[in-house]
Length: 501
Ligand SMILES: NC(=O)C1=CN([C@@H]2O[C@H](COP(=O)(O)OP(=O)(O)OC[C@H]3O[C@@H](n4cnc5c(N)ncnc54)[C@H](OP(=O)(O)O)[C@@H]3O)[C@@H](O)[C@H]2O)C=CC1
Ligand SMILES: O=C1O[C@H](COP(=O)(O)O)[C@@H](O)[C@H](O)[C@H]1O
Image (cartoon, rainbow, N blue to C red; front, side, top):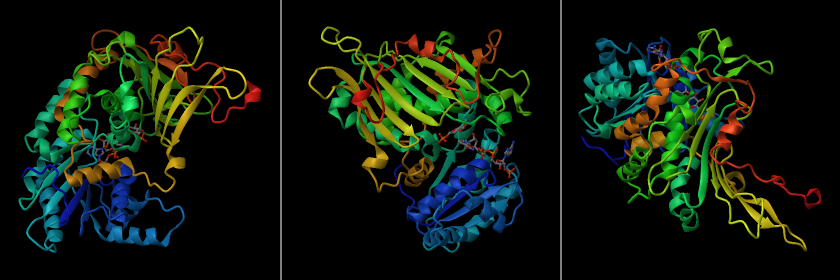
């Protein structure tokens, strides 16, 4: 049944595969709880966890609720958690075995037998490693696909390792599930500030007027994490930072930042525009790439000190790459995507640096910058020059600051996974990755990934950077070559004291 924009309002089962895993306990169940607490889940919803691990319901409930936040021990939240446990159950079984899926089906039908009315809907969430996506998706289609309503499947990243493997995975999944039923999640599309980009761009004529190569000098999209891959080294080494962050999360942010205005907010209109802009990006060149790997420092271990990582691994834990968009709006503007593990801070932001004002009356004046801070603490601020208050004329860099915490004091910003699971329940694909979008994303990144893996010659060696640093020391020169300029001296945040100038 075609199901776009049909909301699951009642008689709904949510089945989480990989329910014993890291993503399920840290993100999926807390997000489902958040939606339940705020009355966004369908009436009478039931959540079923499924994984191979044998555990009783008490153990499952403990794991599924351990990351739910209740810092003030609020009795209301505690009560809601108890209610949430009552509507969640667990079944253990393999991912390959028909019997196991038949057993799951019996469990699902048992729950549905208590529902009123004939229609029932099912949302399947694959919080699983990609190696089991296909057997699970195939078995679910064969044994657990309801004929009494709508079925949807949410699939996690990474979706493939390169263009060929992604196409193979897409093809296999399509044998069982239609595009309409499939929701490929990229949780960055559920983040509040990323969702704000369309509004900022298209609901503000002043911003939109300056949104092109005539005004913008460069754009940086930066992801920084202050911890390394400790405990996840084995997994990470197979993928590297480009597949982990750049090819999906940062490229998604870039596409929303650079797409043309969609005809409407309908999901296909948005995704058509994203695909169009991505198709104007050629594959990344090695000369536009800087790779790094962290080494031990400040009492913290280096990447290679992890026992699960091969001692001679050249897997990058840091990458900066510059993308170019060959279309009339963006020709010549460098888009620098940077991501790293074990850096000096936790931060994800977009920094749009504008061009110089015409010289003449001003000399050495700072450039305008628009910064969208995605996390932590969402903010939009515009760095702009202002006359220094007083009896003389001198331009001073300051900023207009929209920090969410100050501006929207009672706002509750939803977790990305809450927003996206709710979209899937509503059948809204806008913030999920379409098949052709994924294909073009891999086209941009596959050649550079193959180069990094030494498929066409010797694999490049990433430059070392100390754990807890800003990244490789070569980074400033790398960004500088694309024309990025640091603010003029004298920029002080958040308060400028004139006596210090
Ligand atoms: N963790 C995170 O923060 C994020 C994860 N993701 C993606 O979500 C998916 C799940 O991630 P995560 O929860 O961290 O992964 P886990 O390694 O925790 O795997 C989830 C569950 O899958 C089962 N499993 C693990 N390895 C295998 C295997 N080789 N074969 C069969 N089953 C296996 C295990 O359950 P059991 O043995 O009980 O069956 C495990 O509990 C991945 O695709 C990941 O890339 C995306 C964004 C963030
Ligand atoms: O997908 C992933 O994202 C997380 C970062 O997510 P965030 O919401 O905390 O920014 C990253 O740690 C992980 O390596 C990656 O697989």
